[in-house]
Length: 208
View 1: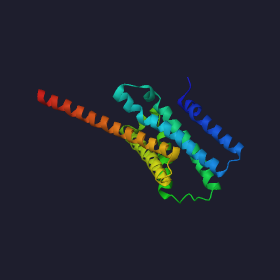
View 2: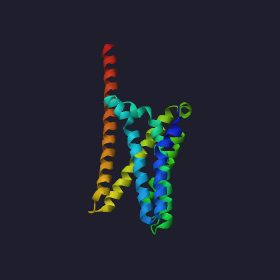
View 3: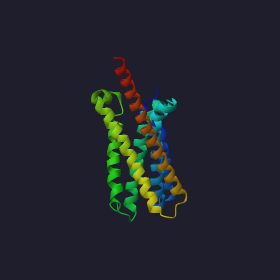
View 4: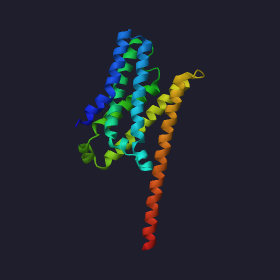
């Protein structure tokens, strides 16, 4: 059976390599590289959404498919965003735009890469045993920081488009809606879990 790392490579890297080859064969203009930046970000976001919805789908309607491969999907996010980062480096090395022009995106993105790699490095049973309860806290913080990173990126991008929304704008709006829906669903399930725990505690107290 293939290990998770190989599965992640098979899932996420070929598309990125194909995009890279197409761009280089085409001459890789600045617009081409910008397209690569956007495409790899979209791939990373798609994998992230799958990870973010994995547990809520299990808890709400009993769908366990995504939860079973959540660690693999998490590695896919890390790999896709690594290629995205390389495209960004390439873009800023050939374009007139400066990396520090948008400081919010620069710092949130930089921290996002660090968080992503820490989560990927600890997505194994050995780390779960070594970190104990802190593992859950680490990954809980990490997944919601990445939520913030994607939300901020798409919100800023949508704002920069102004009135000329077009297909890209609709895509960003759809991404923000998915992020909002995921957060609302997780919040609902958390409140439901807390209310259920309080109900059990109250029943036990009444039986004494």
